[in-house]
Image 1 (cartoon, rainbow, N blue to C red):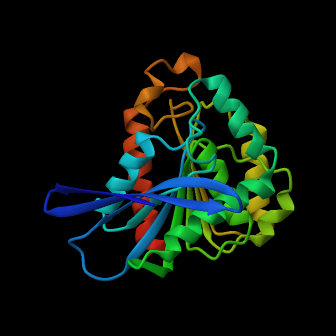
Image 2 (cartoon, rainbow, N blue to C red; image 1 turned 135 degrees about the vertical axis):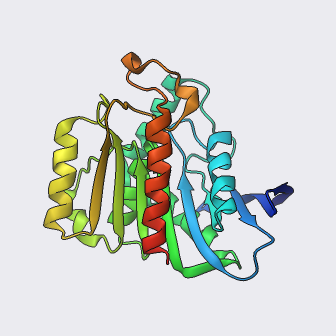
Length: 251
């Protein structure tokens, strides 16, 4: 089932679709965006949502990526219509998947399959990005051995119940973290670094001073004392870091 939309922006013709797809018996609903004014195939970027599920935030990021010339697909981990309304509900939903990394990877791979099926996606040039819970997910996608060019985690949890899975990683990895994020402890960062080194992954970890969790999300507010807050500089710099990363891995 497709819901079609079209918007014009700065000479671009941004086409959007809501795409219903499945993982086994579970119905999922993602969001596709691309610039219809560009001819031919272009690199694809998979987007994984934060713990509140697929929201307007990820859809906006998909459209931003479309304007940069990518085919962007924001996937759905939780299932069609499952969109938590509170932090408590979001924690319960995210916990189901963080505690079952096999299922989390399966849902990520289901979304990746949708992106790969798009006629305009260049299958040789695909990357994935994710925010918070989604950052954890794209690292898990890499740990699953996915044949993609790179993953970018924005303020994601980097812990792994099976660090030996780092040896499965075939792609380049970029992790963008708030230096003062209380929800990603130093021991997890150290374990992540060790995992990447032991697996000989091409990886990079960037920490933004003064930034806490959710630093790219304006809805997180402006009070770092709460542990999650928007940080304009970290948001802008991390987006540029992603673009520079893509310029290398998707060239």
